[in-house]
Image (tube, rainbow, N blue to C red; front, top):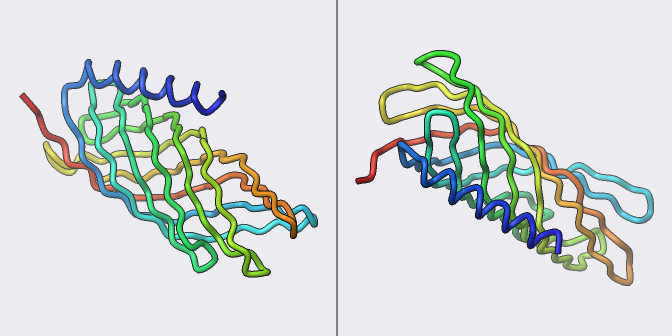
Amino acid sequence: MKNKLYTLLLVASLGATASLADESLIGIEGGGSTFNVDKNTGASKDYTLANVGLKIGAQSDDYRAFLSVRYYDNSTFTSMVTYGGELQYLLNVSSMANFFLGVNAGVVDLKMKDADSIERKVSHGYIGGDAGFNVHVGDNLDVEIGARIINVDAQNVQTNGTYQYNNLITGYGSLIYKFHMN
């Protein structure tokens, strides 16, 4: 029920923001992440992952919203992808740049092989926050540096143990192309 509520709130927020938009956005993103995973034996491990993403969205003077997909790469994870959205408030500090603070929600799909070579699968909702800085390189291009945290809070239970998937913390850079649709 909690995941359905997150999805409903995200879709409503994105729809409301898009209706007030002045510009459409397309972004490509690359970064590095740390993913905390606990095993019921008391062992905790932070996995380092590289990630790439694509996001499309809309922006007004003070807000922007994105729908996004991101792929994460690490030898332990057979695959890991997040699908979601972000709603961000823009703090316009100058005509050359702005800061942003936002919330994000979506779904993470992952497969990994544990130490016993048993495949573990998780498909679970997440919620989180993000913050960063945009530099307006031109009228149609922004360079963005940001940080994102998402709380996965999911478990995979099998006979050889329980894995608890916790927070995914990401530092990233994006190129965002801005354009007007009529």
